[in-house]
Length: 120
Image (cartoon, rainbow, N blue to C red):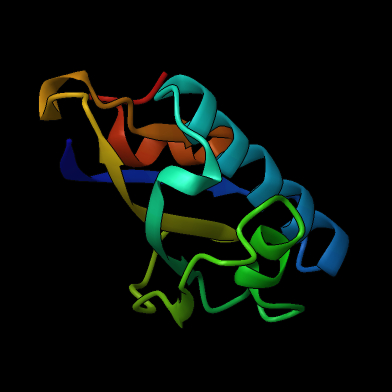
């Protein structure tokens, strides 16, 4: 087993608790499914949110989908002019037998534009 980092991002519909929770659930679910992982394989998760998302903590949504025992932290993304708005980014640290080239990094909805080279 190796420790790997998985990147991902999602653009959510609005700065509401419901929209942020829905987006985080969708993003984490897709990361786990695409990489054949469960929350037990996750070491930690770093969330960033664009400065316009402040209705709730993205980590609070993760707690509701099986990440109760996983160390989580949230931060605000750098406020770069012209950056994609309403965006939640993650870096998920996992234990996995996958090689770094086998890891699926997940970019959903408008966030696909952030990494066209690896987005689905």
